[in-house]
Length: 97
Picture (tube, rainbow, N blue to C red):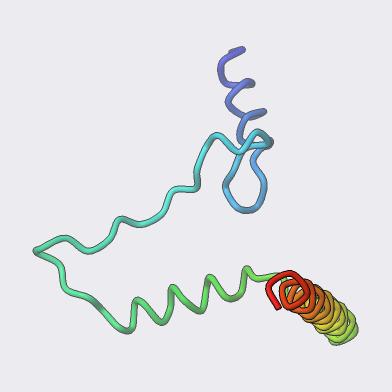
């Protein structure tokens, strides 16, 4: 009886992705087609649609703010690299003439 309760507790501990809290137990996925089976575009499309339904899509506000943050960081990084390059170029001309 205790084994049944332990199994129920273990099943409850899994999250919606099929992973346990520790992440040690992978989700069971259908095996890829073997030599005897052929690829089915319809089955692939259905599977792809199911996977896309699991995606947590960002809101418009989240998308805009995170895109702005990425553009700002890329611009700042490019600026720092540009000025370091100019500094090193100036220093090399001072040393080597």
